[in-house]
Amino acid sequence: MVKIIPLEKAANVRDLGGYKTKDGIVRFNKVVRGASLSDLSDNDQELLQQYGVKDVVDFRSPSEAKEAPDKKIPTAKEFFLPVFGHDETKASISPQELLKQLEQGMTAHAQMIKVYRHFIEDEHAKKAYQEFLQILLANDGEQKSVLFHCTAGKDRTGFGAALVLDLLGVDRQTIMSDYLATNQYLTERTAQMTAAAKKQGAPELLVNGIEALMKADAAYLNESYTAAKEQYGDLKHYATEGLGFTAGEIKDLQKLYLTK
Image (tube, rainbow, N blue to C red; front, side, top):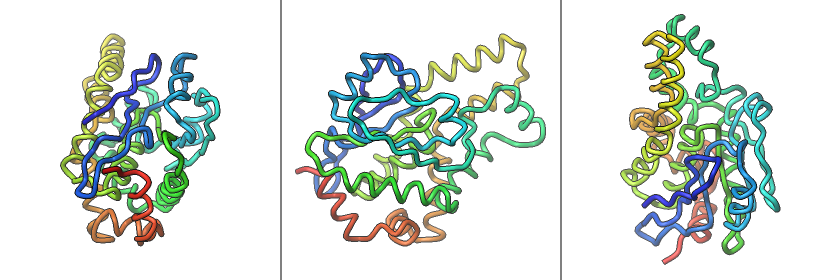
């Protein structure tokens, strides 16, 4: 089940409610994933306010946030939790810089594999997700939502969604389906970027690189699962041992975000 929130100037904004677990169903209007909020229209801001968004968590790097600051949602508190010190996902990179890095030997696929391993291993990333879980835990009001986002709503947000859904007891296949659903919402943006690159005579290396960086790939998220298994056993133990999120807090999170 995918519930898209129809906004005029933001893509891939989705309520994570409705997914089933063995103990219940994830509540609607409690946790929302999204992409950049820098272009929100007045109507978008009003809709998100009416939707009950009380906290906005921004996973972007300082440079991304400076270049495209979030449009404010009235009454919402903002939390700036950069997962990386700079944009490792390359979601905000210029075509010129991307081509330069590709020509120097970087492959887009390998870069994304590294990013998803860093979600598990990087101390900066772990601190961001640790604080994110505490924000979710503090969201104890009815019909009050935490909205978390990055630039494309794909990688840093995609891993964050996978982590939350895993802790709530959603099965891995469903989590992967939610992760891959991003592709249908980024198709237009990816097509625009590749078309612009081709129009400017960009080499195939750059076009292919853009496509690889702009898609959600099962291999990417599976790398996070692999790294978590290697170092902690699974994502739950990554949360308890790597992020210091206790078993009791996981139970409390389930009480807040699950309904029968």
